[in-house]
Image (tube, rainbow, N blue to C red; front, side):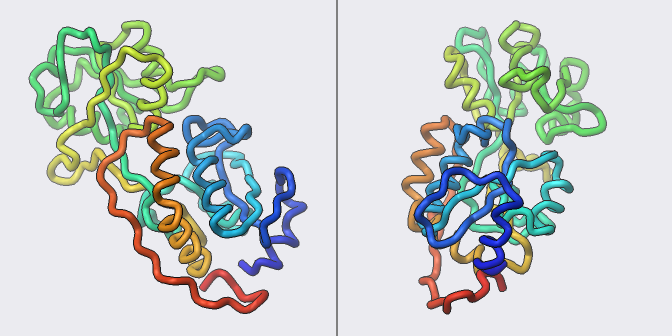
Length: 280
């Protein structure tokens, strides 16, 4: 998308206070999706997008998603309602993706004073515990499927993926707090935020990271663009490389469980004539 086109579309989105950047960067996000993002700018994706906008000399404008389902997200960005979206799987179909800006996975979460310790899907203790997981038989998360493949079925309790009635965390974590489950298996950033707020919890990465034949417990997370916006993707990759230490600090501050991820190496920026397209 041309910079001029982005500026012309400013009246179509809810913009924040005017900044001093030379162009406008519109980012799609969930207005009530902590720990990732919210309309108050408190999520770690809010903070990382602000860092990238600063590196790009851009004014950051948030475009709030009317629906966070994958197809709706893709339609919004492909229709030009925003320029990029945080938190997509690296290489996810339908997007051109940036370098991954973090890599995380599912974790075991349970009280520190529990009479057991678990760090592997193969731990025999799992057969005797009540295990809380998100999803159901029609939408099983990878750890639930991996446990089912091990014959661990009847002691799994499934909960809705989304918080209910404005609750700050998904129901599986409410069940853990109430003692309705012994252990929860939760996506890393959500588990990290919950553990930081509540305290007194053991957080252990689910292993193996890739369960055979191919059930991944980890994922590299990137920024998504329209497939033709190679220029903007390259600019963001350079911004990620330049701000890597700052973005990692944001993730650590948010208590996101991180696995190893190489620092991105971005090519130098090429000169761009005024009004030239950022995309390919």
